[in-house]
Length: 265
Ligand SMILES: [Zn+2]
Ligand SMILES: [Zn+2]
Image (cartoon, rainbow, N blue to C red):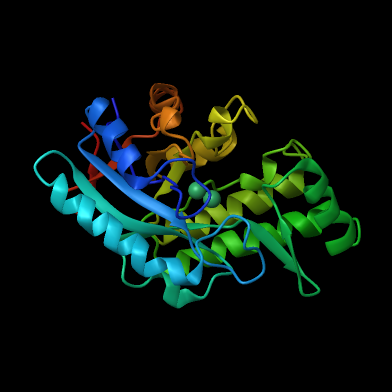
């Protein structure tokens, strides 16, 4: 059983609940730890990320909750750093996770996780109709996240969210596996992310089975996260994610406890 989650969003970015509401839900569920990872500021899409001026209030509120609940639960103030956010926006937190939510082409940022139409637009307008080029750009960004040294890599294959990309193509598999190898070479844990399951966009977590198999083969580490935007989904499908890790032979399932990643019990 996984009773912690480092991938959560609150009303400071695009989550439905306040940080305190998530703390109360975590306590109900018997969590030992909860991390807040609101979206880092990006200048080109203000619809989902934290406003620049909200950073001090965010940090202050998590600080207040840490004190208030210090005897009951470990709380961590983090952020989900978008690949295109300014790098300094990962500083001053207890931790950060990395996520690629866009590909950039010709100065335009195309969201990979917005809707099927946006994915097609990214391929058609951004990449001249070449799906492989879209895949290449996405995974180039993912691989580049290794150098940032995040706590872990969030939703590794987010670009598959709407079923537009052909995950069975040779090119896709080769490109995804190469990016995965870069992260594994750098010792970066990979998230098993149940967020799209919670939002009924997928019936399996990220990453896909062939990627899980590679993680197992290479004895890589995983961390289970729900990418929670709604308190009712704080530990959505965590049991399924754990079972998937075990069934694919992944041995190192980690949780954040005592300020570091340790083996889940
Ligand atoms: Zn994300
Ligand atoms: Zn997220």
